[in-house]
Length: 74
Image 1: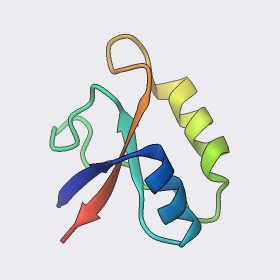
Image 2: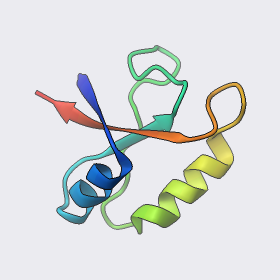
Image 3: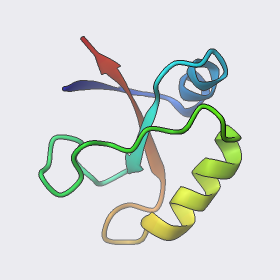
Image 4: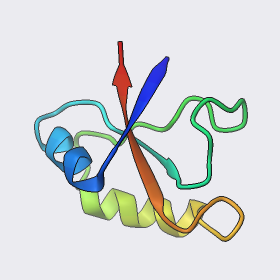
């Protein structure tokens, strides 16, 4: 799979439209065997609540303190 990095604003808009959006900690490589595949944000969940929960449990000094958002490119 190929991914393209997008901004949080673009990710929020795509999520509202029902499109697939993935997120990872900012230092994580989406093509790495350790983070593959990037987790998709469930369309039935609130975007901001999911991002806050995912960031709390998965982001730290080693993996990156913020989230990076990706869309799948075909």
